[in-house]
Structure formats: C-alpha cells, structure tokens
Image (cartoon, helix red, strand yellow):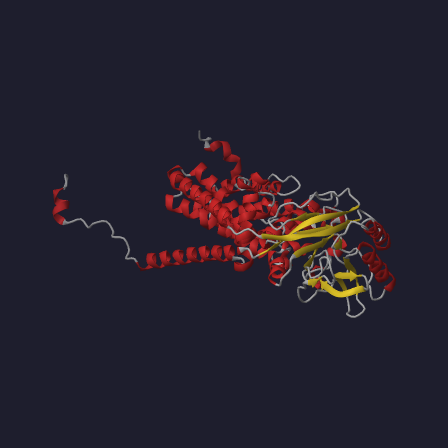
Length: 527
C-alpha cells in the first residue's frame, strides 16, 4: 500500500525537512554501545536515504546528506558535549560536509523511479561513497575513526570473520549495501528481483568468506593482569591505589601487569622513588609492569604520554610515546586560529608532544620471557593501521592503555572497549584494553571475549588467561583493499559519466519537424 503523496506535503518546507534530516541521520548511533542494537545498523540508514531520494534537486539531496551526517556526528560523539559544549555542533557540521557528495549519489542512483541498471549499481556506488566519507574523516586531524559504521558489529561473529579479511571497512560496505538494498525493495518494484538476487549473492559470499577466512592458530596462553583503580582524584592517590591493587596480584602468577592511561603523573627519571616502588611491585608479583606516564619529560621538551615497561630492576628501556593525539583533548589544531576553544570547553591548555614511531616491547626473563607486546595509548586503538603495523612488526599481544573518566557516565567507555574486539579480529592477535576507570576488557585473537570486563563501577585487579595465536590474517597481509575497491568504483562511475557527456556533445542534433511541401499544402482542405 502506497502512502498518498499529500501526506508528506510538510516536507516541502526546508526547515521541517532539515530537522527531519538531522533526526533520521542520528538513528545509526543506536547500533553502537551502549545501546548496542547491532541489528539496527542494517536498516538505520533507510529513513535518511528515503528522505534524500525524495529531494527535488541534487543540491537539496546534498544538503540532506550534510544535515543527516551532522545529526549522526553529534549522536555518536554526544558524550563530548560536557567538554566542548556548543563547539561540538560546529565540529559535527564541518565533518558532515564529507557527506555532501554521498547525498547527491543517493538521489542520483535511487531518486525517482530508478531503472534496474541504476538501482543495481546503487548497491556498489552508495556504499563506496559512504566509505570515502568515513575514510577522510578518519584522519587524526579530523577526529579519527570513531563511530565507523562497521564497528557497530563488534560482537557479531560472522562480521568479525569479515573484519579479519578486509578490516572494519569491509563491514561498513556490507552494512550500507544492505540498507541500500532495503531502499530499492521499498521504492523500485521493477528492480526488486535483480536486487534480491544481488543481496542473496552477497549473503552467500559473506558465508563463503566466513567459512574460508583463515583462523588464527592458537599457540599457547599468557596471563595478563589489568589494574583498574576507578575514579580517584590526583595522580599521587591514583598511583597509591594502583599500587595497592597490584600487590593483591602476589601469588597469582601473572606474566604481565598493565596499568591504564595516565596512571603515573611524573617522569620516572625525575621521580626515582616512584620507579623504585614500581620495581618493588614487579619483584613482588613476578612480572613486568606496563605503566603509562603522562608528564613533562626531562630529556625532551614538552609533555608526553608514554607506555613504560618496568621490571624488577627498574625501567627496562621499553618506552613508547603516543603518536596520534586527540584533537582538542590533547592538542588544539591551528591553535592560533582555534585557541578560543579552551575558553568554551575543556580543550587542552598546552599541546602534548608526539612520538615518532611504533614500538614492540619484548618481555625479558623466564615465564613469558620473549613475549612481544605492542602498546597503543587510548585514542590510537581506533586506528586500524596502527595495530596492523604493530602486528607486522611481530607483536603477539596488543595492549591499549586508556582513560575515559571525563566521560564516565556516558556511552564512551563501552564504545571505546568495543574497538578492541575489532582490532583483535583484524590482526588475529589478542587485545588487552586496560583503563583507569572502566570499561576494561580483553579479547582473544578472533575478537571473542576472554573473561568478564571491568565496568565503570569497578576498582579491582584481575588476571586474564589470554590465548595467543600465530599466523597472519588476510587484512594484515593485504591491508585496506576494500577502500581501494570503493575508490575504484567511484572512479569508474566518474569515467562512465564523462564518456556519456562526451557522446552527448558529439551526437548530431535531433532532426527537426519535416518541411511541408507545396503539394501537401495544396491537398489540405480549405486551400
């Protein structure tokens, strides 16, 4: 049954239409933690795409794409509001500009009564356009890859198998393709049969990939302890509580103890007393302690966030300086221009300094001696390429040290922890996500949970039995090939459009009406 067109006359108002675009664009955020309605991702774009395809012009469709993306950016980052206040709307609007071409593509492929060819092509073109927007906004300076649509599938086993083949990008393509297929089924009766066939073929391909994708081979286990002190004010009190929780690990035989981000508030070279206390803890529990130092360095100017490995004799020399910083949280881009953000919200008053290269640390000694650990700091776990590089360098366990205490009662802690499952599946390596205040979680090399997570209400130290694996996933070997494929689709689309335009220009003009002959004129009545 079709709804009469006059039921939607109010959408002719640009203001009402704009508000609806923002609202329907925000819907996909419900597929992410904390709601975690993962199944909703496969239809969440449908209302937004239906609105775009009804746009009277390509310009209006692009505007609907921008407004909907603004709603999506605000919804998936809403927990930043206490820090950025109204500035989050400005940032969301700027990032959403990347969806202007996507809005135009949706109307171009699905608007009006799309032909079978156009509707079928939409299954490749629309997801490719979406992926390009995700790719560009994943650049660190634009906020990074938080809220990629494919990451909503972090707890779905078949999706994690796809992740091991093409990374989170491949799952984003799949999710958008299914949404596009639903729109075609609702709006293009003539194209339903080939689109259903294409979707069935896609489902068969997903099943085949899931069955074919090589699984990591388990090679043993390692015991990793996570220390989560909870909400504690002041670096000295935080250190003391983490120290007490670590002492509780004595006799439990961990191979590695991990503290969260900013767990140490002073350079250990300048505070030998803190270094000595950490070394004593290492001797007590019989394992190295990986801490995170957030402090001004004595050997280099500026403030760094650094993963530092401490053993029984003190700092072992294993140090990794955070390379990718959180815009506004740890530095202000173009501070001379945007420095006013520090007065509006809680933007960084001083820019932190960056590290220069990834580091794989090797645990010395017996037990887990020789275990290679790849550390990342907080925000860096969102970047697929960083964990992939550590894996390629030989990391057997990936460790993320994080702190989301500023956003303790929001969706942020659960969203952040879920990224560890994706990084584990992409690389075929276990991931330990250790935080100061929760959610801390550990995932095995297939993205499966390895023990119960520590929630935001926990103050505890827990030992996880973490499975190790060897071998290489397709994603580690081949990299971001779905991105290259999506780009190729759009290039071919542009080339086909250019060829059609040239042919139209070269074609002779259509013949005019035939000239009337004198005999025909004379034969007419009344002449």
